[in-house]
Image (cartoon, rainbow, N blue to C red; front, top):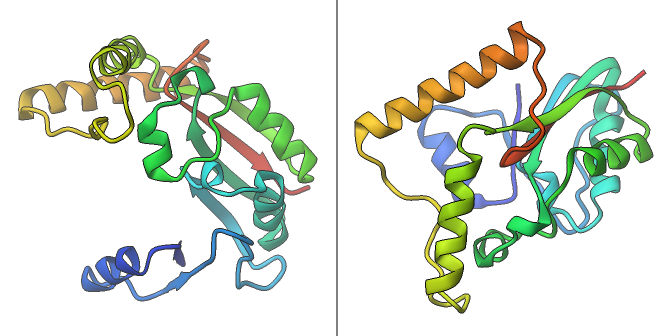
Length: 188
């Protein structure tokens, strides 16, 4: 297992926690420093939206996958949810499930499953995002979308996430929308 990040600070944090197989990459060109076909699984969790050329980034993930290897990708959903918070995080775009599938296919991957996650918290997130738009008009006054929550509320949200995961995996349920898109693709 190898961890990859663009941030030296993030990598140093990981090293302090005992993780040693780490490397830094440049998001501008998104060239991964690994040999062709060297991994069985690649996780790109909230990564692809940061790269200027998302199809190249997906193709680069495909390059380092062994034949039959899996790429699991998560990205933020819906450009309608774009806010100054996306800009502060360095996002280039948000996706629909269809857009992520199309980008994956253009990179040569075969998508086995895709859909939306964080369905049950979507209404609350929309409400909060719209309230922020009303009261925080400019990017400078826009506060972080991450906020500490009381432990009982956080525990409830974790349980809601587990319920959603159970519904998606055990019942093969697909949600019509959510805060993020997830896809599982294979290199054939």
